[in-house]
Length: 167
Ligand SMILES: [Mg+2]
Image 1 (cartoon, rainbow, N blue to C red):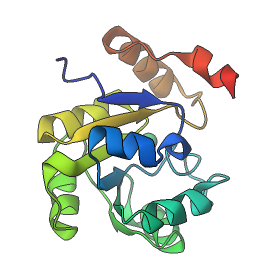
Image 2: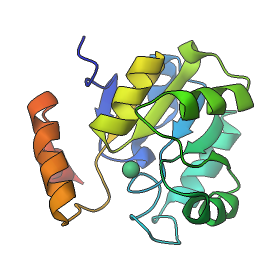
Image 3: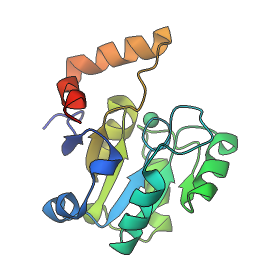
């Protein structure tokens, strides 16, 4: 299996439900922040995230934010969401993911890294040996670096953007 291939690819974290968790035996979610729970740089979570988090909590799913962004960016939003967090996660290196797993006392087998980027979230999760869930970014970034990165991503894993229109 390619190191860039997610275990499963979905539109949004909001599509993670009891059925998906059961299917893959997932009890722990390691959550990327930017473009996974909120728009990049936005101080607010996206619509529906609060409700989704409380549904996950009611299913006894343990969660932690693992972001490559700074403490300054991650702390206020994670706290507003009632989630523990690891900032400066350095994905695709695995220290951030490792720290998150330790903090939750979680085992790899029942944990999944959830994020919108192949080269950080998915690659990092696959290297660490957790399950990986690729979501569509809430917002397609316009900067040249992001355009280049998304272009490169397409060489490794073909996202099905047509799914976005089905909702
Ligand atoms: Mg992201």
